Amino acid sequence: MWPGLATFSWLDQAPRGKRLEALVALDRLCLPGEAWVAPQWRDFFERSLKLALLVEGGWPQGYLALLPLGGGEAEILKLGIDPDWRRQGWGRQLMEYAFAQLGPARLVLELRASNRAAQQMYLSFGFAPVGRRKDYYDAPLEDALVYIKEA
Image (cartoon, rainbow, N blue to C red; front, side):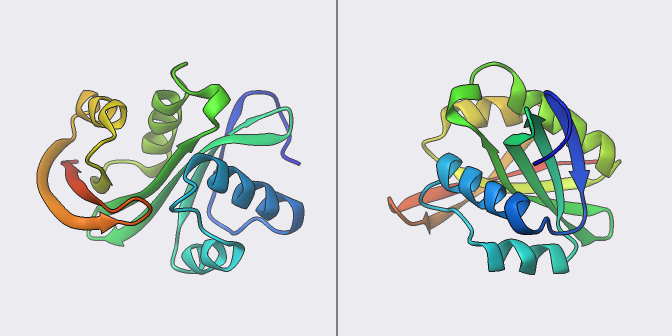
């Protein structure tokens, strides 16, 4: 699938074939109510999506999807780590890798109000809560918190 053992990769083009299937499957595993199907992944890559991948044994174990917005700003659209790989620091390492690849940028993201672990991780990276989006998420219906990190 992907070469290497527990490595990070930076993609700015949509993976194809089995690689795209593996990414879709991982997204479904990590974010079942918010998973994208293959055409959505391709569409976001056409809009300049950048993807940081955590790869082990040729298979993706985590991902962070960033969409550059112009003017030195980017949005974190997704961050997912295989449930078997969670709580081991991989999300933090993936973010550090992605931010180093992206360079200085003002970052914005939304996350579920109930996701306390993610809130703590983003705060530790210097993100600050700036707002709330009522009923932003489906399955289950839930508010989103909006966080921003200045460049």
